Image (cartoon, rainbow, N blue to C red; front, top):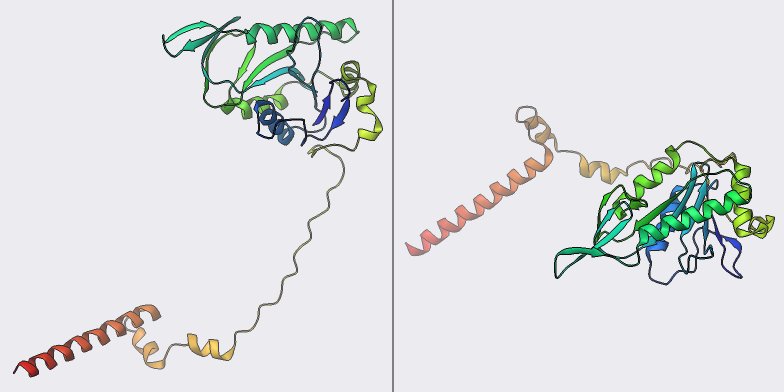
Length: 274
């Protein structure tokens, strides 16, 4: 996957392992790192896209052969309820759901729709951009009923990523390229940035076969070691009739020795008292 920052003065392709995040991982960093591990270089992730009339809202735009997604990662926690375009949050004191502001469902849905209309006005085919609200914290719980914006909880991220590959192909490589240029500018795809990629499981380049480690021939056991492991002749003869192994014979001998010591000690005590 390739990441393109569309912010002012930052229109350049970046390695997927780097974005200007805070030192502590936040919701966006968690989401982007998960994408980077799962997606190949057919996918582009655009950040800091500015749309007139939508304030500071700046979701991530994921573009790939299977579609387009406007994703807003958030680290908020609590209990929420999403019913179509209604967005509510549970008040811990009153234990009642109240309208939550800002309404992330409506804002993200409107942003995705506006971007889609802008692309159509530039001559691109009308493709739905699916709005996705991603909760990175497992302490967030959402009860949803046909929400206008897709809800993805922390434990649902792997399922979301799997769906990116399973959906039908709707965009050709050149279509994706032209969309990225229209949004981020042609300099985002300059050859100077073409080498900044992450792993691509679909690459046609042959991978080097891993070198086989040179195996050393097993060393012949020393004569002393062989002798130390060899059982005495008397033990081998008795073992033919009594199925004891070497360790069992050692335990038996120790037990016999301890028994003899105890008997001698008792006899010595009895003689002294007599």
